Length: 257
Image (tube, rainbow, N blue to C red; front, side, top):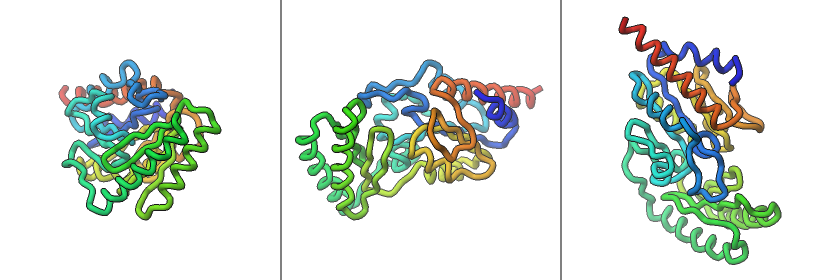
């Protein structure tokens, strides 16, 4: 971790309320060809749980995964807020319900994507409460491009479908949601003075772009980014979380002396 990021983390022990948000895939868990094979790196979840137990700290996992899948893969306990489906689902809210028009759009697109798999059998479809996701990780480049192009064409022909491209995935959502808005909504709800957010993918760039001037954005891995800081990989994220725990715990202890 570079000195500039260490320096900006050090004063966070004394801010009033700190919201720490992290993406899951590519941030806490290495990317996997099979989505359900993803697992957090060693120390990631213990670091998040330890932070979530500190006074004046809210911790959130903010993911494109469906809420139930995110819970299953992360094994996050109740002290951690889960935000799934790119902000469309939250463990702080009730179950997501589609209206009639959204449900009809979802079902129609689902049927078309199933037919698409006949021509692109290596691709996989993931179903979320409000979105369908085409996965092409592990496929040959030409085959992946052909499947993605066909899926995007299907979604483009329907009004109200939000298409989001990621790393070897394309998500087609029938509701409008994004990680940035969900993160800011949570910050307002808990009264956060500063947000620290780390992520690796295109959808995390949406969150970086919406963070406030006092907030800290951290890009995981290579690539162009709107984030102010960068770390190398998932293990570097764990180091960052452990540093945050250290500065917050030390500040709390000093207040008690």
